[in-house]
Image (cartoon, rainbow, N blue to C red; front, side):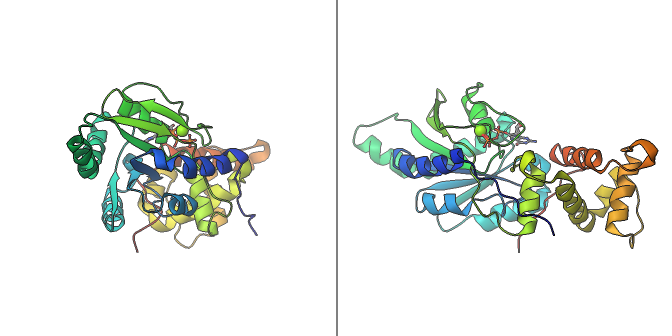
Length: 283
Ligand SMILES: Nc1nc2c(ncn2[C@@H]2O[C@H](COP(=O)(O)OP(=O)(O)OP(=O)(O)O)[C@@H](O)[C@H]2O)c(=O)[nH]1
Ligand SMILES: [Mg+2]
């Protein structure tokens, strides 16, 4: 039986408290999630805190997700006062639609302020979301400079930080936050597989094995293109070993190095080498 994955260090609890405390300082919240797992990468604790505050849900890393699923997700998230769009935070061009949407969401507030003679004040935005969903990257792209630290692992940003963009936006970078109980096993696995959970707190073989099985069910063509054909009735563990063998992950005596293959597979998945995949479909 696989162990539950838990990762909720002190700085995340502090970040949740900071979010609550600093929310009144901002006009708007950008909530980033991972377009490959739009349900599991949204933190219910954050949602509760954000409450009625204006928010734009950003399905980031859209370049790694299945485009038709992303379109469906954006459609299903939008409405009832919530705004949603998909992005590639590393790409300046894809950011323009976020700036446009922000200005249209804020128009009424800015017009009212202008009527009282307060023109040109910056729109203040807090950027929140689960770890590794591209908050700091998005801020850097919006600011046009490397003002926030980024990294290809979760838990990079440790404390809130205001970053002016030099334009109409002032952004507060927040640490990524998870919540103490991370949903069911599938949610835990896809959060870990896509890199929102620190590798050190997971069993990489278990996570890779479960993710491999999910992807064979959902994207058999992409999987066989990268890891070779497999009999459709093959035992899943045999299939995992066969994939490891094909990728040359062998130990002395010809045994499969499961740990090395698991890491190789997760690296392929995170960097998009398997193809554009979305683990969660709109119901
Ligand atoms: N492919 C792809 N990678 C992205 C995108 N946005 C961010 N990344 C990568 O995702 C990783 C995490 O980015 P960060 O900006 O550090 O994420 P964060 O949400 O600030 O993470 P924490 O501070 O740990 O919560 C980095 O390696 C980025 O280069 C994107 O749209 N597409
Ligand atoms: Mg960050």
